[in-house]
Image 1 (tube, helix red, strand yellow):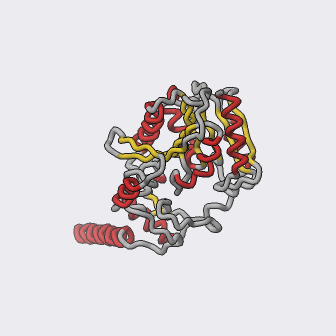
Image 2: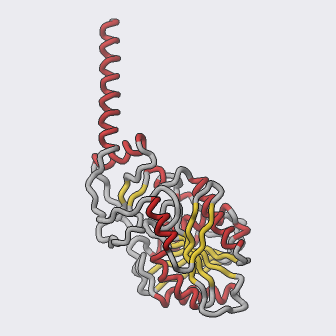
Length: 320
């Protein structure tokens, strides 16, 4: 009996060691990549930030990270708008740079616009595509709102696009009194069917192994068939499992006591979210200070200038 028990223990130990070795092998052996963009290191982000000459702001978070805010100034000062700022929270894989599509037309409408690069994205500090936890992440978002207010803007409207919708909702839940309104574009609780295909077993195993042995390593590559991969290395196409699992966006809700105007919009050609699913999201927003906008000829990531001008019209009507 003792021999059988001893043999069983040795067998179990052998299996545990073999699994651990195999896991380490997978964690430290990169898989094939479909994205031909290697991105940048945190050190390279710092150097690019120091050499950036365009209008911008930087601030340091409570835990010592330097975050970058791109800035679009209006061509003229409108006394009815000078205390209003629009703060853009960008989408998945992106950073503030591609949001010239929003910054230019909104600032042309007389509003000062800022675009935050999330920690680990664009020209901000932080391990690429990573966050050690939800509370720290939301705290950094809230501090970006407070920083913009500290520049003299009494009213800050947060504009979230795609992933930025969830980020804007988190900020509104954290610092509701500091946010004068929300513009939530191209986001919903449910995407179009068939977008996410099952991953091969070995790819799943590699991600799990990395999550266990290298939690700060961006082992998950974002890629879907038909997407356009930018050659710009400031885009972030690789994420850590802990970043992707730090919050369940389907459980996010606008708090019932959030008493500020909200505009929800979606492109009529959005390939990720159907209009009816965005409408379902809109219907769950409490209160009557909300509007729904279908943006003509807009895909998920390409939104024509005239759509941003519609948003300027909404801002004028709501805040002037």
